[in-house]
Amino acid sequence: MEELKKLREEIDRIDEEILRLLNERAKFAKKIGEIKTKRNLPIHVPEREREIFEKILRLNKEVYGEIFPSEALIHIYREIISACLSLEKSLRIAYLGPKATFTHQAALEFFGFSAQFIPCSTIKDVFLEVENKRVDYGVVPVENTIEGVVNYTLDMFLSSDVKIAGEIVIPIALHLLSTSDKLEDIKRIYSHKMALAQCRDWLERNLPFVQIIEVDSTAKACEIALEDETAGAIASEVAAYTYHLNILAKNIQDSGDNYTRFLVIAKKDLKPTGNDKTSLLFGVKDEPGALYRVLEVFYKHGINLTKIESRPSKKRAWDYVFFIDLEGHKENKRIKEALEELKGKTQFLKVLGSYPKALFQES
View 1 (cartoon, rainbow, N blue to C red):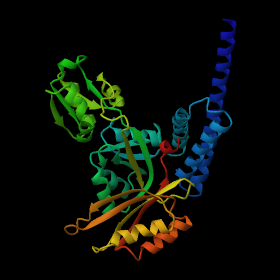
View 2 (spheres, one colour):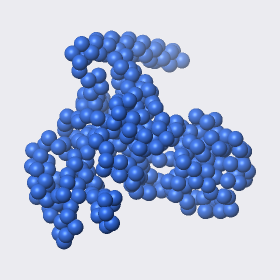
View 3 (spheres, rainbow, N blue to C red):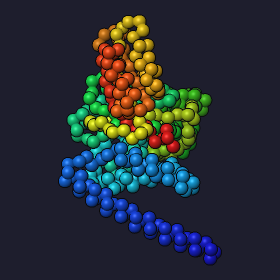
View 4 (cartoon, rainbow, N blue to C red):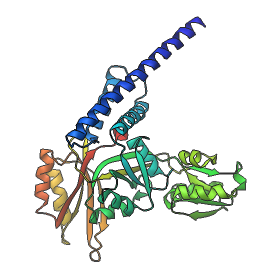
C-alpha cells in the first residue's frame, strides 16, 4: 500500500506539472495572437498545426516508444490546440447538420470543442456560408467506403470557388437507438438513407417485419425516436448521448471496414506540408482517347492517383467532368509541370485545392 501511495503521489505531481505547462502554453498562444492581430496575419494556420501533430507523433514513437497511444495523443493535442487558438480567435465552422450527425463528429475531431459550430440544413448552405465569409471553414461529406461518393458535394465544386483545405476520415459505427430498452418494442426504424443502406443485412436478419423509414439525417431520426417508444433510430454513439437514448444494438453496420471521408472547405490555399493531396476537376473533349491522353500525363510525371470519379457536367446530355485526387502538393515541381501540360489536353482544368492528408491515414 505504501508503494501504491507513492506512485499516486507521483501521478499527482505530474498532473500539476501538466496543468502548469498547459497554462504556460496558453500564455504564449495569446502573445502570438496579439502579434498576428497587429501585423494583420491569419490567426489560424493549418500548416503549422500539421507540423505540431507530426512532431508530437514522431517524438512519441521514436523517443518514448508509444507507451502513450498515438491515437489518443492526437485527440488530446487537438483539444489543446483548439483551446489555445480560441484565446486568439474562436473559429466559426459550418457543417452539414443538425448536431450529433457524423459530419458534426468529423468537424469536432478536426477543429476541437473550442471552435464555434454552425449547423446547416444542406451541403449547398455550407458552401454558401464559406463563400460569403460568414464562417472560417465548412465541413461536408464526400464519400463512404460502402456507399460511394456524395454526388451533391462533388457537383457543388462545379460552380463554387471555395478550396479544399483538409480532409477527415472517421470510422462509421452505427447503433440502434430508442427510448425503449427492449428490441421487441420497435415497430418502425428511422435514419438517413446512407445509414439504412449500410445496415440493410442486419435489419433483414434481425427485424424483417419492422417498417423502415428514410429521413433527412440520423439526428432527425433520433428526434423522432425521442417522442415515440415504438420507434428506433440508427445513429452514432454520440447521438445516443446527445439525445439520451438507449442503445439496443451496437455496431449493426454490415461491414466492419466502414469509413466516411469529409472535406474541409475554405476560401484560401494552403502551403505544402510534405504529406499532401491535391484535388482536380477537369473536362475533356467528347472524342476517342481524350481521357487516356489526360491520364497519360500523370503516368509520365510519376504522379500517383488515389481517386477518379466522373459526374455529368449538367451542360448537355452525356457530357462528363472528372474529379481526381493525387498525391502531392500543386507547388511540387512534378505536379506543376503536369498541370501545365494538362491545360493543353483538357477543355477546362480547375485545381480544387492542395491540403494535408488525413491524420487517420498516417497513424
